[in-house]
Image (cartoon, rainbow, N blue to C red):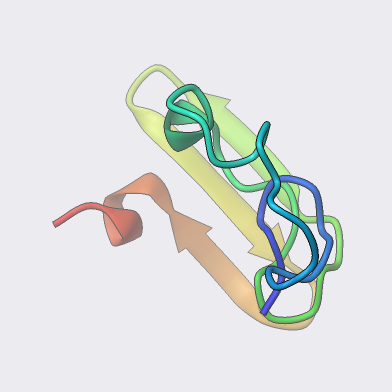
Length: 64
């Protein structure tokens, strides 16, 4: 698994900037499965992100 904010492996280092309170509000920039850079669209009501290999995810999919 990879960090969705920096793309490095989750087990590598502490990722202090990636796990802070502000990071919880940011959309993912990297795919957690393959670390590829994702196409991200932010709207007033949420965000959507697309990995070319693993498909789409949205802010609605991460809540609840």
